[in-house]
Image (cartoon, rainbow, N blue to C red; front, side, top):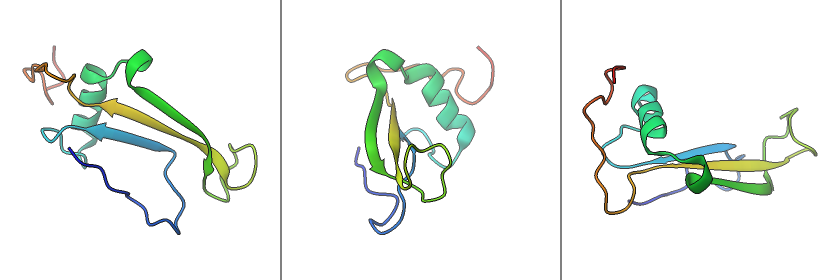
Length: 92
């Protein structure tokens, strides 16, 4: 797995980043949501980076161009397979 910046340094950075394995299509919101629902544990897989450059017009930030970035690790646990039997079907 590799990660590269989605935005050039001169642009504003996203406030949310989701990391998925190669079996998940990052352009398909249904499969990304499935990966979050089945592979993400908030107490272990959540990263918040405070005081980062943000969008200048974001009304939720404490100061202009200053916000936080949230990262979600929706990858399979290392060394463990995850069943894909209900992947994308909406059924359990």
